[in-house]
Length: 208
Length: 185
Image (tube, rainbow over all chains, first blue to last red; front, side, top):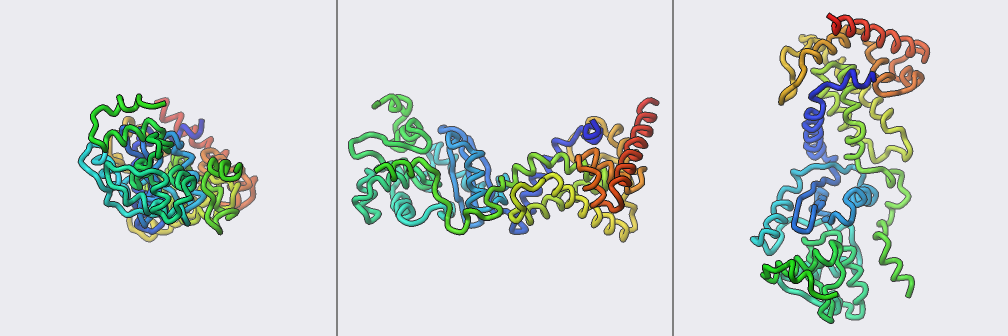
């Protein structure tokens, strides 16, 4: 009641402007530890998050963006703000990738969420070119441990930077698509798109 | 075999040194802004007036962001923000006193960009709030707006909880009287 007395009509617009300005000032003051934004894509809304070093996380909607942000707050820093500016290049390049005009991403990455063998696996994945695929076993060999096929599966399943680190290019030796953070439909769509197929939906129907 | 299979389902382990840290359970700061941003803006408007409210809001949240990682888990985030806003309001008042232009003046034109549906109503409200003695303004803002108990308000503005209660009650009564009379005319 008393609160409403002070709720002026332009409050929503003013708050939006204030929040945007806060993100800018926080960045300038070195207090923006994790910036994030969302972008729409053919595989659903994507969360993009970056530290001062580079993009640190890409998340699909099925991972629950709020839960992902809570994880980033716990693991990196609670100084997390919606700040689209820092992710402008990443968002633009993701858009270009889905439009078919981009085959490589040229944004700095922050791999601080991964360590050890998983990090080695991501290094191998970054060398898998657009339109190519490799089996989990082959990636294990390239990462220096041919027996660690399951560990490669784990590394892909926990890849904090899907799309930018192309874990979708890792498929099963028997020809199956394999699991994917964004769901198997999303993985089929990406592989079809990169193979130059216009029938992504049709391919999505193939296989069990 | 069950070990790796279950560990695969769990989220990645935290890096050493992060687990159990004080700030480990804090939600993203964006959620704090989302939940308390509007209330803090109203408190700032009531305490420093609409002109200086934007600056006070920005200073409050920037200071809060700076201190946020060391905020103990389970803290009353709203009371914490109001405390910071109070300090920033005092800073603004001290700075205003050094300037030749009075800080209490009302805007001739609505300050924010974009359409303001009822600037006349807003301007009259701020005139009524600005007419309150400073202590009443603060006690109204911190108790009636922010919901702080009188004891916590007293800790901020000085004096006893009973004095804070009386100042808040007098302030809100004066505000209703002024506002009601102007509204009825």
